[in-house]
Image (cartoon, rainbow, N blue to C red; front, side, top):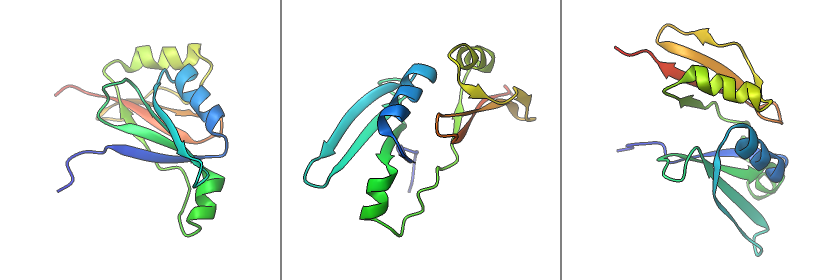
Length: 129
């Protein structure tokens, strides 16, 4: 039985640029930066905090497409959750991240943001019941 989401793979054209976005604009931490010279692959694991249950792994889109041409390397749709959407929205704006409007979704308040490759993600603060 699947119990939780552990990692999400995101395929990017420029890993260093993606790391810079996630650490400098989104406030994430690099958990690991590893690779295999033999395979010609590098992967970078990032997360909102060192002890996060779920992490994102940034893969080089070109390398992965050569290794596994059958894979769809489009960015997955990710929804992050927060306890203070107003503060997070302000932090993203202050750091220069591209964001959408802060909107009420019925079950919570949400906004979307884009990384430097125009991949979109969303953040939501769920309403308390």
